[in-house]
Length: 242
Image (cartoon, rainbow, N blue to C red; front, side, top):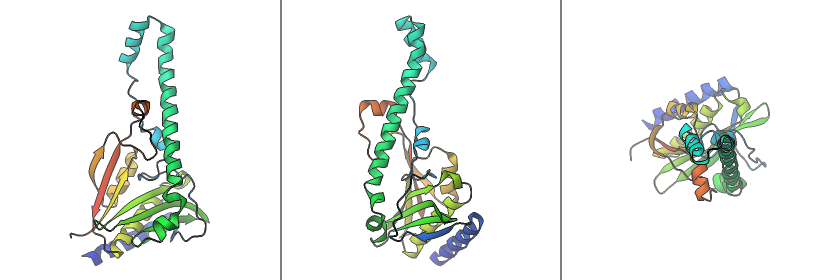
């Protein structure tokens, strides 16, 4: 059965590669430093625009404006409240995203070779189109539970819609099959349905969801919790029964 799965992944990946025209290669230590590519949906690559659109803004209802006016009796102050709240939302969203990017660029993305290329059961790939890196993805093995985690999937926003993200995802699945992992898991903060449909098209099933996820690098102050909330979804693809 595993052989059939491997063949299916390989043929589908080859077809996707022909459609998008990109080549996919393991990231050798040639100085590949990750640019801030727009994310295609995995947990590891939330761009500022993507995450900013996911913020759950809790003080935007008409009721809040009515309450403000009833308390202050001031049209001027009531009109200023939405601007103040939007400014606070922007400030804390920007602060959280920058903290997240700083954390990523000082951990695994600071030394791809040490985190993904040297450890057994892990790997990192880049998608190259016309001599430019247009996408990345990582596979991080978890030997304790015989799973591999799909991480850092990201595609340059200028090259989306060409099948690159799906081809990158299939690279991870093929890698997992070749290395006899039992399952592939991932987490995503993507708000766009296209990202979730991508994972489902690859065979993943949603296994859980958290409404108050804490991004790496967040301080979790009261104001951050008020102005920045993000939904985190977990997916799993079972390759074989153990």
